[in-house]
Image (cartoon, rainbow, N blue to C red; front, top):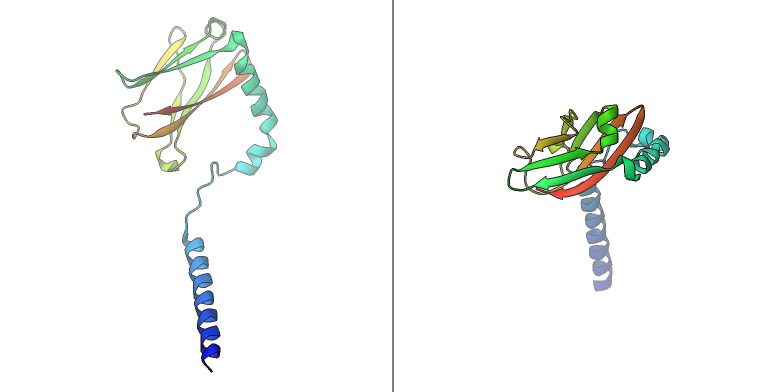
Length: 145
């Protein structure tokens, strides 16, 4: 009769462990990178084209982290300065989407400084999308603030 109690106890503990794991996993908050990821995935070829456009030597964007002034400095190529630049910059925080910040690009003489004072310290992904002469560009860079 002892082995019957042992099997029953093992089965009871196993079922309790499974129920606990299911409960914990259902209560765990899952943050997706983007809310409309499926729609973005279907149009990803456009994103690949933007990245390739930004890699060309005449379309380079320089991103420099200025730790003394706590700014991120952007410098557009002369080609973009002549043609005009519009777009946005996003500070993306993968561990907490509530911390994400978005800025419009408004470069003066081809450069712009974005203040970092309101960003929490940690790892950030800087996503820059811009348009110049009806052509779109995209650059990502990981920084630590």
